[in-house]
Each structure stands twice: as C-alpha cells, then as structure tokens.
Length: 100
Length: 465
Image (tube, chains in turn blue, cyan):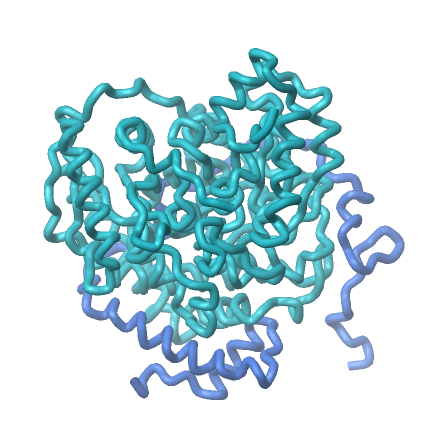
C-alpha cells in the first residue's frame, strides 16, 4: 500500500531520532517497516470514536512515597560498569562545542 | 545417587529433607547434565559452577527452596553475575544489584546455577535471535525451543535444572513452555515485580516460573509474587498463595474461543485441544464455545505498535556511558524494533498508530470482561503449531507476533495464564494447552491446570537426549 511506504527521508529522520546508525546492509529494514506499518492498518477496521485509550491495565494511578533518604550505590559501584571514567565521574562525549 | 537432575522441585525437596542426598549432590547433578548436553542445546549463556557448589555446602535446606538449583533467564539482574539479555551490547555487564524476584528466590534458598539464553533483549519467539547462538529444542534438535524464554524452557525439558524463571511480555513464558513440553505460568500483570528485569514492554512485562509440574510452578509463584515499592505498577497485595486442590471441576464454566482456531492452526494442535476439552468435561467442567471473541489479528497489530513503542523508549537508556557498549552494538532485530517504535511515537504518526493501538487495547480488555461474564476461565491452544524448524524466524519481521497470536490478547489485558503439556504431534513434538482467567484469578488457573495434570501423564514424558 503506497500510503504506508516509508520514504528515505522519514527513514533517515527516524534513525536520527533513534540514535542509530543503519548500515547499508541493513537498509532492508526500511521495507520491513513499511510492511509492519501496512500490517497494522487492520486496526482501522475497528471503530474507536468514543473509546478511551488504555495505557495501564491494573488501574493504578500515580504512586507516591515519602522522600526519605535511603542508602544506595557507592560511587565506586555506580561507576564500576562504565567503559570510561575520569576523576570518579562518568565520561561522555562532549555535547556542547565551546568554540561555537 | 544418579539422575537427581530429573527430579521435580517437590521430589527434590523431599529427598533433601529426608537426607537421601545433599544440596551439593543435587547441584552437581545438574551441572553434570549441563556439561553433557549444553554443547548441543545452548540453553545457557553463563554457567555458575564454583559459586553454586560453594553455596550448596552451607545452604539451609529448611528454607522453602533450600538447596534447589535454579536457572535464571539472562534478562534478570543478578548481582556480581554477567547479565547480557543475550545481547552483545551487554557482553561485559556485571549486574550491580539483584532483581527483587532474584532477592526473593535467593532468600528462599534457591541456588543459581546459570543464566539462560533468550532472543536478544527478549525480542522474539524463537531464541534464535540471541547474539550467543540459538538454543535448540530438546525434543528435536532440528527445531526451535520457542521464546523468548527458550533457554529456561529447554533447560527444564532437558533436566538441566530443577526450576527456572522466565519473563513474558506476550507469550515469552507460555509459548516456549508449550514448544518444549513443560509448564509455564504467566501471572497477572503486576503480581510479580519487574524491578531489576531488563525492561522490554513495561506495560505488559510479567516475570514468572517455568517448571516441570503445575505445582512446582505455583510454589515458585508464591515466592516470586507480592507488592514491591520499587515497581510502581506492582499490585498492592501480599504474596499469592496456592488455593485448595479441587477434586473435580463441577460448577465451573470454561470458554473455548472459536477465533483461536484458524486455517493456519496445525490440525494436530486442534485435535489435541478438543481432546483436552473432553478431559475437562469428564472432570466436571461445562465447556462453552465462545463464538464472538475478538479476532486475535487485532491483538497482533496492537502488540506490534505498543511493543515497538515501549522498546524504543526502554532501549534509549543504552548509551554506553554507565554500562555496556554503545548503540552500534545493537543487533538488527533490536534496531528494527527501535525504529518502528520511534516512528509510531514521532510527531505526525502518534495518533494514527500509538493512540489508535491504545484505544483498541481498551476494546480487547472490554472483550475479555464480556467473555468472563459468561465463563470462569478460557482455554485454547498456546501456539497455532508445534515447534518450528531452526531458521524459521530468519528474515521474518513479524515471526514472533504470528507465533504468539493466541497469547497476545491475554497479555495485552494483563491476565494470568498457564501453558501445560496436553499432547504430542506425530513427530513427537509437544503441544501446549493454555488456561486463562480474569486478573488476579491465578487460583482458578492453578486449580484447573493441576487437576488436568493429575489426570494425564504428558508432563511425565521426557525427551531422549
């Protein structure tokens, strides 16, 4: 169905939003997305005009608790699984370029 | 003593208490079995020999699971043990804490002997999309075990462990249990804490047991269940307790949805379910055909949209900064799911996909409410077919959704359900019967399943390995 054909531009935009690099050998994913989008068209057969969405099935509303201080990970344990650390902090790539 | 690994939980407990053997004997027996078979089966990603034997020497056998070997799906966080979710992205991740359920099982005396294989990130129904190679079906090594908890189900079927735990989002406990001829008990959504289980589709993720008998699975559910303040969707109830065993099913109405049989259903699967219907009738149940249950095809579509959407959100945390590698380590299946989810949630498409699916979800819940006014429980096949051949899922973007079409509706509605062995096909592959009930009615599921099991011997059969 042409309506559901995911264009190159939408595909690239979705990959960027997903923070994923799609390799050229994985480009068939684009067609599979179109197929999946076509499959779910079946939902249009059902009238949902006056139907509320169900986000949560056991009907719980906001769950609150007292903001008590509890013991948690030590800094050492929290950092133990990071590939890069510096001065007892996680090390990330820079997101702000100071030259700009 | 030989073959201790073949014991059920109940038998193993009796043997330990009467000192016929020790926890070390029991753990060693399972480890020997794993050593012998797992080169072929690949049920385990990680085997924990030394630490398990060390714990077996000091464990208190009076605890409810004291000294019992436990296989854990590798998406449960287990402190100081490699936890990969069968993905290469987490091939270096040593969990920093225990999932709530793991804490409970450990406190009950269970001894973790290994972490079992799954479809990477639990994305699938074959266990062949694991980044660590497929698990094979113990009944026929050319066939798949199902998934995503395929490693746990295969480990139970092959007697590599006494008990195991898996997790289900839409079929991931029941479908591999059916394909491997064992018992898989999926609790009501929120009955068992999700805390510390690598999140897949948070609004349906339900951890639960995979065991050799209904009673064993129920014993595990008792221990795993209960309110957890660390999981906001956890039900505010104490631990679930097994109800009395019924002598018969007199007075119970059980529904059979006609829409759960389609031209794609393997004829032997249909025959097996109709035979099971006869057994349930003999036990006293009244069987009502349900002609107007919503076609499962809508659940496939709802599940596809919601699962991808929640996956794209849940897997956003894997940035390689705090744990694991960076996002280039995601396999193709995960990328495909993240992409579709991001697409469904993105501006311009949200209403057409995500919101529409959540509205149809309401219709699915209402449909179950309507059916449960007529019947106490619903039965059907777990899967339209017996275990498919290795390679069946390759290149099939919707493989899991189609295999799980009969378990997706109840998962979407958060209902409890069980898969129990009810027959074998001509080639000797097991067939599973599922029993579903309204939310929080695990008692009914247990009573029907237990009585069925007590009056049949399918659960006693084991593969020749």
